[in-house]
Amino acid sequence: MIGVILCGGFGTRLNNGKRKKILKPLLKLNGKPIIKYIIDDFKKNNINEIILLGGYKIKDLNKYIKKLKDNKIKVVNTGLRTDTAGRLLRAKKIIGNKEFIFTYGDTLVQANLKRIIRKKNKKNFIFSYFKYKIPYGVYEINKKSITKMYEKNYDVMINSGYYFLDRRVFKFIRSRNDSFEKKIIPKIIKSNLIAIDHFETNNWMPVDTYHNKIIVEKYIKNNK
Image (cartoon, rainbow, N blue to C red):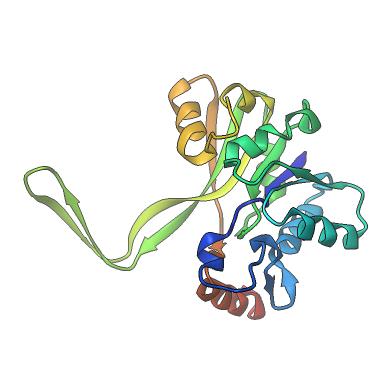
């Protein structure tokens, strides 16, 4: 199985107002770039062939990967303004007939990948979710009125961003402007052509802002 990681976004929320812009996957958490945490986790689970889908600041990404001296990690230039599914499409030839994990280079997920890989077969895709407790009161509302109230700790299933796929996904992607989240996932769900299994991740931590960075660093420091 191949690991395919999105690494080409502008990191708008992280870089907003900052003079020195940074590629989010290269942001260091306790001295180690986010992308290295993901690569190490993949390697630990015998996912050694890894494709990084670059775009923004791709020179910085190439420079970092060269330092790792690992010829099984490839960087693909998918363009500056290509959307998430469009970036994946650029790696179609390299992926070939192999099954692959598709994920984000700015998010840390805790899951038993070996167990999930065993569930992948020729009939299914597997998507991850994280059970997130909303710490606020939640309303259900129709056009006329409020119909229900949930007082705090209401569970919602967050897309935690690990997708176990194969070449069939490319039937749904048409252009570089296709968003995997907004366009391709709904297409797959509506098609009924592919069984979609799911698994719950033990933890999920996006690093969208420097505030997120501080929180995640504390988790890492405390071995969480």
